Image 1 (cartoon, rainbow, N blue to C red):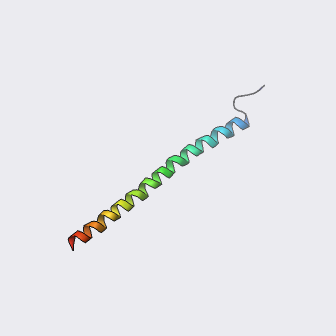
Image 2 (spheres, rainbow, N blue to C red):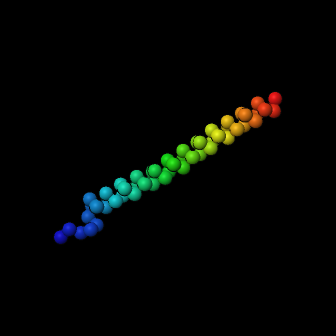
Image 3 (cartoon, rainbow, N blue to C red):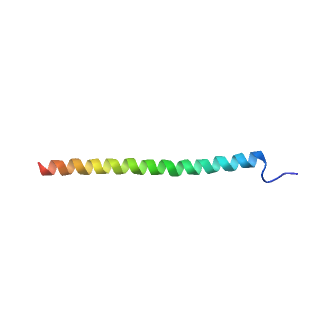
Length: 51
C-alpha cells in the first residue's frame, strides 16, 4: 500500500517548504540591504547640501 506519508513525499514536501522559507529570508535580507543603501545615499546627499 502506498501511504501518503512515505519518505519520498515527506522529503519532497520539506524541500519545497525550505525553499519557500529561504525565499522569504532572502527577500528580507535584500530589503534590509536596499534600505541601508538608500539611507546612506540620503545621508550623503544631506551632508553635501549642508556644506
